Length: 241
Image (cartoon, rainbow, N blue to C red):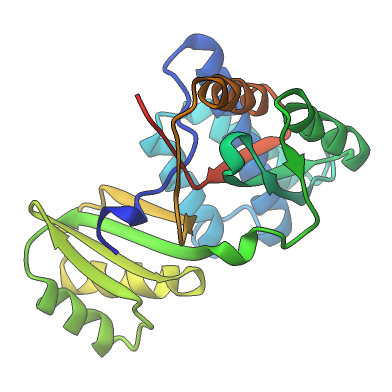
């Protein structure tokens, strides 16, 4: 896979407004996961993973606690996941994941960035088959054989293990996330995960070089960032400097 596996997710700038957006995103997702699977991280693995990720992204404790309390109380909005797919500027492939309490509003908000940048929102599944849904765990190390052995001993379905520049990257199907992380934590108690996520990785990539396409791509991503219901954006674009 080489460096082509690198996740091309949208990275929000470290501004006050963007930080508020990140906090809101995590608060909503924690609320939904806790409401659906229980508000105790010890018994809800998905919730535990999400809280750990939120803390790594410096989400304040009060944001996490408020979402958990809201879920435990049983009140609040009923959010449901929504996924939209299509082709963005430069004909790149795009997946947009949302949490919504109003699907009509959300599709309208998500459609607008496509319309305003001469892009095309497609039908469900139109591009998802060109992405792999992976668990990715990355940490310092250089012994891929020991890592692979630990995973195989735990009967983890491993897709790939790579070592590059003193970093080990483990790829597994998204369904193997908890199994893989537990196996690595048990085998290497001092492990510190620098990469710890479930994401969509494009099988192919497209380079955007045209100035108009680059400008449209930046506009497209910016507009998606501004959509309150958008949680994650995945794409296969490489934007030339």
